[in-house]
Amino acid sequence: MAFYSPDPAMDQALVDLVHHLESRGRPGLGEHLSITWLRFAGSQIDRAAQLEPAAYWAQPVQGSSWRGEQLRYPASVVKLVYLVAAEAWLQQDRLAETPELRRALAAMVQDSSNNATEYVVDRLSGTTGGPELADDAMAAWVEQRQLVNRWLTDLAWQELAGWNACQKTWDDGPYGRERQFYGVNNANRNRLSSHGVARLLQAVIAAAVVSPPACARMRALLQRSLDEGARAADPENQVDGFLGAGLPPEARLWSKAGWMSQARHDAAYIELEGSAPTLLVVMSEGSARAGDADLLPEICSRLMAFG
Image (cartoon, rainbow, N blue to C red; front, side):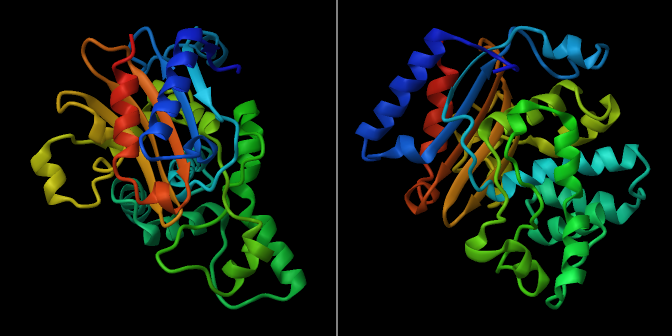
């Protein structure tokens, strides 16, 4: 892969971990799991701020993956894509800066609000939901709705190959033209890979996309508290049941989780004294994985103990 150098010891540790998890009551887990795991020599926060993009991405990074290129339904992890796209639109004056937009971006990422995400996608694309549309009108609507996908293509990152990020996230489900847009058998669902999510999150952490001030705003929304009291007060904290639950309280965490009836995912950048700064993306599919609140924390704790 272009954005990391495979490390044989990490490769073996990841294979051993998947086999261990399968042997502990999770048969066949590996088929439903994608992991991208990167370890850095030093903190990546604002690491690219004073560098040309090519110079930053040329820096050596050790990593490993398990099915990292496989495309999977991302659930709320797609909200990271929409967050970065919104900052890119703002920088290009394609989107007006308003308090309501900032409120929606915060709710979308900090609280994983689906209602806020619907608003953000409408603002990014210039489309709105409503009744079904006739073919010609629907074609024009679809063309507008693909703006985020065209922006992703323009990034020219090979890790984003095959991505689809054009659908809203839902509490209940799409209706009308939104349902039309999903196509037969939901063929037009969002789909991302752990490799691509890892590169996008790394770019935000390092200020290697949009601009350093924009990345600082995004990191502020992605930062999670590991304080037990704060987590207990917020049942939707995106830590419990996810990667952050496998960390000690002194760790620093930036993350975006995704969870629904058929998926449990998380994308996290972690700094912990005594350990290499780590970026970890785990995507797990199927109802058994969705209901397994111990899976992601165990993956995180074991991989953070590596080396």
